[in-house]
Image (tube, rainbow, N blue to C red; front, top):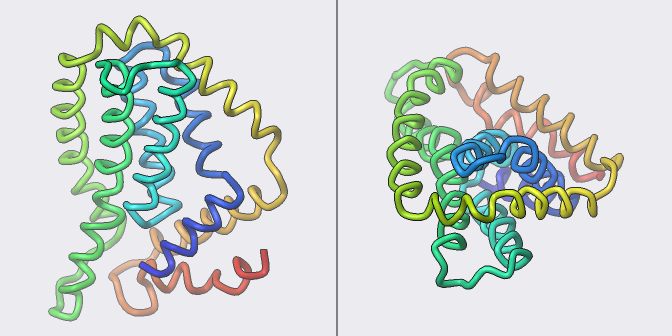
Length: 212
């Protein structure tokens, strides 16, 4: 959890997570349904880099709130509610396997229950997709039509915020490389042990991260 918090602080400082989420939304979200998919895809990417669901939720809520404010949407409108809930679902549903499920499995690993990270993700993915389909279907019936009237402006808002970030900085690139290395290290290991857990993967990067 501490490693997740440290990575979250680093991602927030470099604004790399914002860039990933905004890029996905601006490129994929051409319709309300595709915007839901964009939030979910961005959630899978960001939650893999930031293994802390609260940090991911805060980040996505900030992005959704900024979009609603840029569009001058009333806080009580269906469009604003749909955008905020779409971001919330994208952050929490995608984070389930990276956070809650892994923590639960780490608690029973000493009981002799073997598993691999890739196997765990593949087994949980159908449930996450099913959860997303149910949540976004209900959400679309609630406010999809109203959101469709603002969808082009939503994309323009995301593109404008992405443009203000400019080109990727050196710190952003270093953070991305280190995060991907940690992910590869944790995913390619076999059965979980103290040496092969994600905590070990993150801890091996503590020194380089602190130097940034």
